[in-house]
Length: 465
Ligand code: 5GP
Ligand code: SF4
Ligand code: MG
Image (cartoon, rainbow, N blue to C red):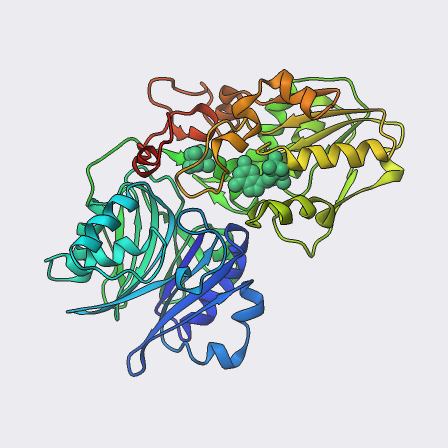
């Protein structure tokens, strides 16, 4: 998901809508905005579909007045799949000291246990979302003010969370102690903003101030600016390495590095590790493009757009049902026949999950008369599901969970299939010495099976580590 918040500008909701539009790649199912106005109080709007189809209408935006607003774009991972407007964030609650709204990116790994306990003690849940626990824990806290109640609540929560929240006068941002999901602080005029990624600061002309640190909470007000503290026990940081590979936008900056440059570097490493003789390096657009550019550069094999992407389709992976996803590949991608015919083609993609995309693309490329098809993948085999906010299917559906590399190659019937190594990936993201085995610098659980936070709910449901 994507989260965005602004304080200290006129009509903050308009800025939030623009920010969410720039974060649309992080969630396309639904979006929501809550604003606060000193006279009109809190207002909210939650809608299915793209930001641009909902939060551009003047009549809707006029219902969201005020200098303080937060928003969320949703991509369902925890809770129910598919559509229920009650699961669309931000969530809003009224407490003794006034209301608060929260927007959460990540996934709470002990949400089932917390929900059961809260329901037993009388909480009434409105949604099936794991994030709603935070609001109920806040309502039950005995602390005197909302930021302290939020700290209280988040100390009980396990898993990944980057949260943007607001009260009547405060904009609040928090990252979990491992900093699994991103969150950055920006400055716009006299105001401030919080965003999942820097690309959303660019769209509103805000300046990047810095990243919110793992375990940090910032409370921002008009009068006092940004107040920072660290309410959690310190833990080693475990930023999601897959943000670098796929999830973030290439024009975002993470840890001072351009995501585009990192992906290009992944392609360079991939070419070094898995060379093959061929005539053309083709990206599977758009997610494979920067890595393909790096691969072509390093190998000296010409780069070409052998697959053309229809710009009017979203990210296929994020469509919730298998059937739509299956169709999606053809709706979204088509072969540039004239370029492909007779050539030995290297196809570069960011990841293989179910193998649906790769299989369809291979068929299309062979139909178009390619002489050979070699897949090169910019991440190691995805053999484990993510429980921290990226929607990977159950383990059984992951190609790499049941097959070796050779078996996958045979299954896809391609001439070769190779993945970057985990160490190669770490080098590409800037860890010159590779992955530290005893304490990896990133979360890489979907590749390694080493989960930095025990997925408690999933284990209770029978998931085996
Ligand atoms: P597959 O067709 O193998 O199931 O999915 C692989 C494709 O899904 C890749 O092209 C990749 O760009 C895309 N993708 C989108 N979202 C995700 C995600 O959350 N995880 C992974 N691993 N791949 C994703
Ligand atoms: Fe990211 Fe994979 Fe870890 Fe999930 S399991 S947080 S996708 S690295
Ligand atoms: Mg892709």
